[in-house]
Image (tube, rainbow, N blue to C red; front, side, top):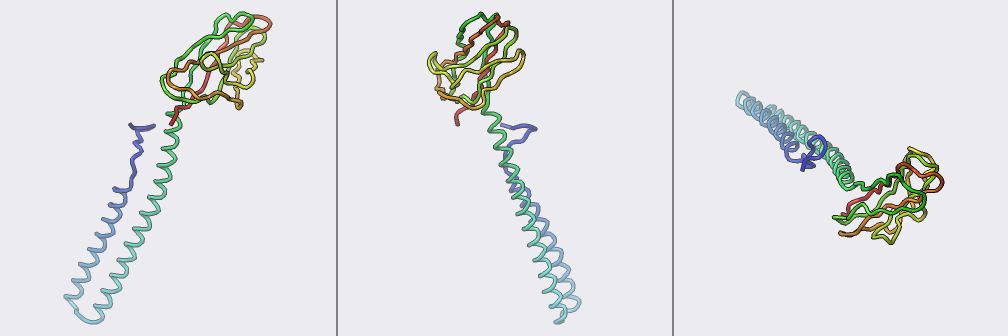
Length: 201
């Protein structure tokens, strides 16, 4: 399947190498024809010496062409590897979450997703609108939390990021994601919890 910008991830080796070698062989053929014409006009030792020099020069041209192809292929292979890794990474990351509206004071837990594939939790993020304070977490199958410590949402309308501290991260097909919020002080208008996942290889 084509990637960003129509990039297919296919190697460029055949067309580039063939073109360079075709050019080198064409140059060698042209030189050979000139040498043959020269020998027909003057078949002398000096003509033979000229032929040797010309063939040597042609061989150098072919060698340079091969070196150029090799360097170009190495560069293209590096680009290919970078793009392949980038596309692979981008297509493996996805996000699931939910919003608790009019979040009451106290604890609220809501199941928001069933895993259709095997995947692993990478991050947990939280967002609060209104209220004065709240903490969030998420858990698998209503039992095991993903953060070693609840994520505090001290500022309204600003995403908080869990960073490290992920645990119980592996999901199998059929596992459930539950978002968790605990509100203290004034009730929040909205609390959003977002979980980043990576598809299993």
